[in-house]
Length: 297
Ligand SMILES: [Zn+2]
Ligand SMILES: [Zn+2]
Image 1 (tube, helix red, strand yellow):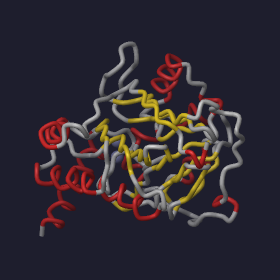
Image 2 (tube, rainbow, N blue to C red):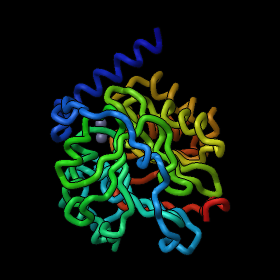
Image 3 (cartoon, rainbow, N blue to C red):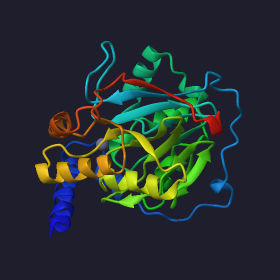
């Protein structure tokens, strides 16, 4: 009963956001997938060289978010994170439009022409809207999308290379795209190995942030999750849902939680009162640095 209520509330929240706030959300959801499945070559690791980050750090920079945090950066409804590891540079989601992504990346000195690939969490416009900038800066670059996201033709139409994901896949040493779950819509998170444990990045968490983290714990041998960063889709959600998802994260051993984007203030209040040491504060410009995992850099 509790699960059914949770699913219903999630569906209502999703519908409200998809129809009201997000750019082009419904449009992308309805696009057909013409040739599902990943190709043999697409499942292989990216051929990234060890040229990138020689400092042995994993860096996560929130390039786009609707929450202000660092002065001088633009806010916009959506999220985009730039990630640098000893072996790869990539973008997780792209925000709602190319201009905000370009402006904030410029302020940070992040050269998006140097990324190795893009990972898109799900089809909503506030996550895919910056892709035209990537198409201009890095034509043909791989864009990992959930298999049933309906994004394949859109991504290809931009001159980029869609790679459909249907199971947890290592796309660079120490970087995994997590098996997509159905919210709706289909959504995938990312896990990055650090010496402290995994950093799990999430877009909107329509399937539930705890369920996405469970995929990382279940599918990866390094199963310990240190940090969870991104949108939790709990804005205006009832307290019992917030409590259930945050309690689940705590029991999964998560140490730090950074609620961004569509997480809402209620989840921050809950964490502040029940798990104060877990709560991480952030918004656009948040920069997190972790020591790199010893077995990947
Ligand atoms: Zn969103
Ligand atoms: Zn969404």
